Length: 456
Image 1 (cartoon, rainbow, N blue to C red):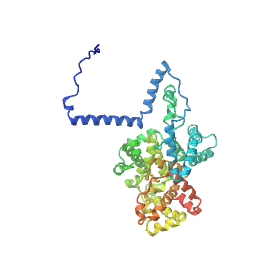
Image 2 (cartoon, helix red, strand yellow; image 1 turned 45 degrees about the horizontal axis):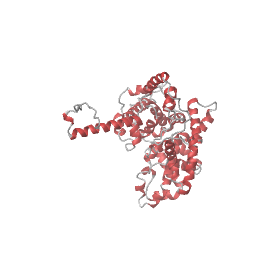
Image 3 (tube, rainbow, N blue to C red; image 1 turned 180 degrees about the vertical axis):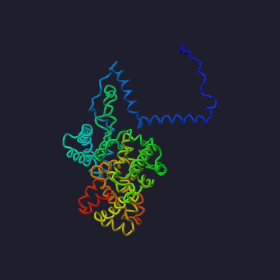
Image 4 (cartoon, helix red, strand yellow; image 1 turned 120 degrees about the horizontal axis):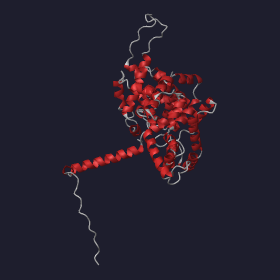
């Protein structure tokens, strides 16, 4: 018996216009589809909707869930996926793995896995409680405990250097309990930096008022620097726009402009020869070389431009005041200290560089000026900054010496050491911090006092 063939309706006429049927138009459509796919992936990966939008969506879904409860919520203490844990283990142990032998590697990775599953998680929860609830009475002891935790345990981060809070929450839990959303979105690192740098609170309106003032006298210099700020770092380019960097630096220039334009004290006579008329600030003194690179990690780690602005300004004004003068006296003192400390810690390497007429002012100027933010990768810079903000930005000089020691064999073997030092290798922050801490005991007391004072 012949199979029954259903009657199918005739095919609908093609809705594609005639001008889109050529090979060129086909390629155009393919490009548009690819761009749409990329934009969708990009939105999913890093550009989440605003907090208000997400809260509205969660309220809408919550009302739907109340009408139809659905399955029970996932437990709050659910373990992270195995693949995610493994990637985090690899990110945290990458620097140490380079120093391990093959035989000891397996046991150390096993210990690292146990640490991430237990001790590091507990330490992370303690940090989150401290940030959210504040110290319990003993402020000094809590700060010391926070610093030790940063040094010994570090801030457990993903491959992008971002620090997220424990525990991981299921989407169903977020729908039923929207109050959990700030926990998911919060990023501990930026709040710990605010605490360690003792940065003051700032109203967002104060930052917006600086933005609304328009272009500062240093605007042209700022625009000449922003497009090349960490230009080869894909993580930074994916997360931070050039417009954000321009706004922050322009607001910072206005702040320094206002500080330099303050009138003389009221008790002084305007006609007194001791209080001459102050000329308007020079654009070269309100925006200096390196400010763009120093502000870049803050913009990368912060949840808002206002947070990044207050951290950048407070770092420069309170912790690196000698770095923001037009002559940069603190930077030049830091370069001289690199040469002196290297001679103390590794005399042979220092003598080799001196014989080649290579002083720190030739190869270490960017590293001193930017607190090593010029050396990729950016997640390693964030790890190093955790240490510097916890124990003092003056230790950046020892971090530079540590990088030189890690390059020791290559420098000594090179016929032209200047070629080796033309660009530092990728930063290994964990190893650099270990060496910098070990170098502290080798520095004479008088030299260490100079090290502490050189940023002032």
